[in-house]
Image (cartoon, rainbow, N blue to C red; front, side, top):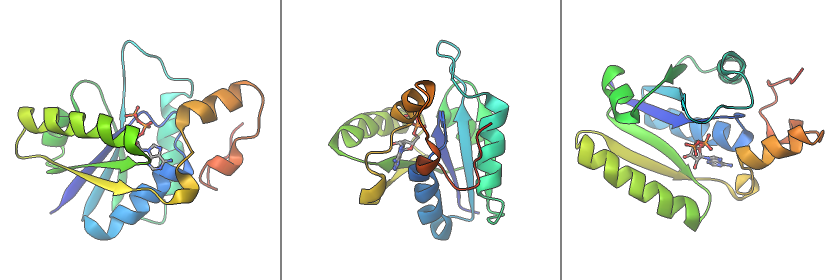
Length: 152
Ligand code: ADP
């Protein structure tokens, strides 16, 4: 069984994230969207809300599940028997950052391969931290989120 972990903070989960997972569905038997919990950096949107939103987004896709983890992504992959880490690339800055992380992950766990999918141009500017700032300033962020996500 080919399993990929798609790790991120997903604070919040955006249309860009959804698009990467949907592109990856035909490539893997199972995709675990993995919300990393960073003990030094607290997220804006509650963890249980983020889990619920991702579950709702993929209610039509039984091969997509949601998990949460603390610690190393590669350790979470071992726990899930996942041999692939899925990441999305928006621009050269993402590429630079992501290639370093992939090389470090490879050094720690050579059996785990990072796979990158390039995002569609309409999602290239969607960035969770900017979406979050718009939300905090009272803006409408619904156009940047999967349709299933309804903020209260
Ligand atoms: P992190 O905190 O690890 O950067 P994010 O939640 O911001 O987590 O992103 C998770 C993954 O999704 C990363 O690989 C990131 O490059 C990718 N990503 C973020 N936004 C988009 C987007 N708009 N289109 C495609 N991929 C994206």
